[in-house]
Image (cartoon, rainbow, N blue to C red; front, side, top):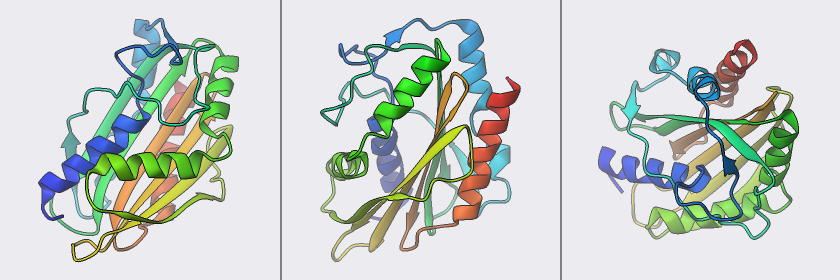
Length: 220
């Protein structure tokens, strides 16, 4: 796997797993999108200027059409209503050890809905289920080295973090690290995803980026 084209494919697979679907599976949230909450969601997203000091340099990556496939058997969001949604993804300007940074913000109709969604997303077994689904979605011969929940970062009202590590034989990069931080703030559920090659990347930087999103949700 070499070149920015491969990185784009990986990034697309990563966010297709986690996005609300256009074709409505009955287990997905009810859609009642409104302008105010769409602005709130998009206003909280990661911005290119947020990455100005993060090597190797970043440029926007067009978001991909949403997946209509829920990947874990316990995923059922049908009791909740989604009123705002936004995504912002970025790819590196040159090949290096960093492959992708993306953010997603969902705004729910009520705080209770947001808590419910977050609890579905943090169901026991999520790390293993999502890691296997992503491995298949990447379309390359990967072996899962680990899929684990990390210590919860200090961001949002509640937060969870996962790390997936994949290995591929006779290809570069040797290892692919995917880290996900998801947190709850009011009616918002936000996700920061990063991908790194051959090393797990900078945890301090990831938490700092998640806190930027959190601050914008608080101020919206």
